[in-house]
Length: 424
Ligand SMILES: Cc1cc2nc3c(=O)[nH]c(=O)nc-3n(C[C@H](O)[C@H](O)[C@H](O)COP(=O)(O)OP(=O)(O)OC[C@H]3O[C@@H](n4cnc5c(N)ncnc54)[C@H](O)[C@@H]3O)c2cc1C
Image (cartoon, rainbow, N blue to C red; front, side, top):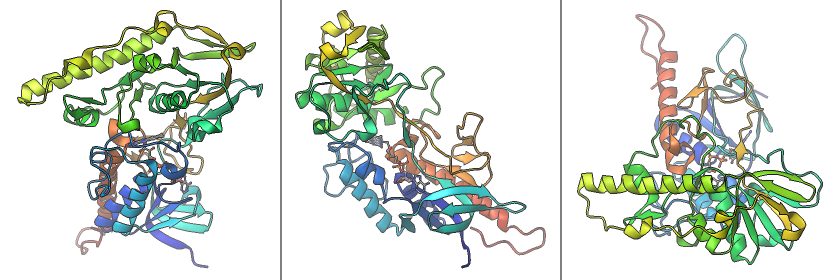
């Protein structure tokens, strides 16, 4: 059987792969998108049941299509988001082949292009775009106990409170996932301990504008790289229950017990770093500085947005902040399960090309990798803070497609005096 050939192969049909297909299609670049599951599978089946978008429907979307049946200021469910990308792929007639896994990509010897081994045979591609996601492999830190006493799952495996055994739950991680899961468990009547590390938090809305708007007008979605020392700082936001500010003091008032970074497990006990007060203070500082920047923006631009002084009122410190718990006896606290909301790692075992540093981190500039012909889209901070988010990946994909178009033009140039190539 003849080997299938394609100009540009896109691996993954989440939002990144669909955005890539739109831009390649518009530019007339022949391409194929291979997806091992279904379009937007991670939205549909790899997240908890009640998850809604962290950003409102007017913002967390691509420019070409609105969520027709969702109030623009509401937060679409994960199922609705998955449907949105299925509809989008249909609308742009994206050449997506589902149920095909890419197992290995290697460079051709002595000529350009790549050999792509898939679950359905070999494909030759001039270029490969990895759109396999910012959050690929759940990470559980090495401190997790191995004695099998507690039920332990990663946030990627959490679906709903009914999945956990009776008893109290320790949720490790104070980012969007950890805080939303902790809140859901507390509402379901569970005793919850929430282990909070360094984080940034935002007001859900301020002066009648959602935080996504503020990050936009203040240029904070566009900041290009993480400042040194803030590489692991997570953002705590939530669109759940109509959207609310993640305020750890409020969570504590509602019954969640806050603890610092989880240090280790030994002799039936779990210990925590003495950093809770500092972590909460840092989150508050980020929050209050954002309000300052927003006020400044309103002033400089003469906007008539209503003042909201109440947004600066923080609740008094709860008991778990004034007397931080540094050690808990798991049995006495009734903890039977741990949810590790501790993030994800990348996994590029299939992409066997010279596009990674010695730690396995992709080497690229705005998605154009160090291996000619290999591209990345959808990675966290690919070009800016917004890169792993729905709207951000669309813009990054446009840049990558533009690079591909330019490279095709070089390829098609056949030397002085020859007719111009056909690549456009
Ligand atoms: C809990 C959670 C909530 C989030 N909420 C929001 C939000 O509200 N708003 C927002 O903008 N962003 C949100 N994000 C961030 C981001 O939008 C999502 O992570 C999104 O799924 C990323 O899309 P993607 O296309 O880059 O990657 P993915 O959705 O991970 O898609 C990658 C695809 O590649 C496929 N694939 C992987 N390897 C292969 C292979 N070898 N061969 C073939 N196919 C392969 C996978 O099956 C998958 O379908 C959230 C993330 C998480 C974890």
